[in-house]
Image (cartoon, rainbow, N blue to C red; front, side):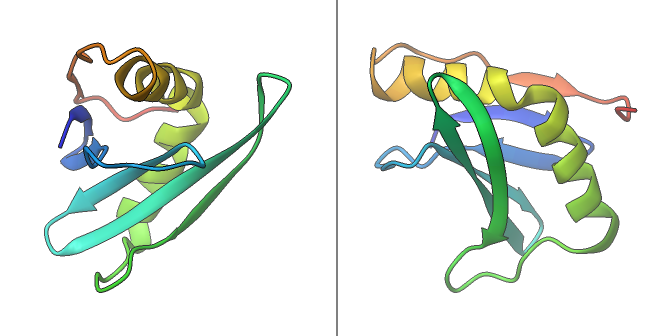
Length: 101
């Protein structure tokens, strides 16, 4: 399970057996959501946040923080996904402790 970011206590990661579409998971405590990236011609057109089967979804401020994080770091998340799953490279973990926006 490659951990790629931590933002305000929210762990953002991939499961090591992921599949397309490109997506990332976010977990804080017992709550977990995922974000799927819809890309056309190399440009992120849409990001959909949804719940994860058998987990309670992020809610309230944690969900807002995750959505804000996605707005700012979407390209970097996709880059890390491609590096890990396509090129089989290790990805660097980054911890962001200051609130974005």
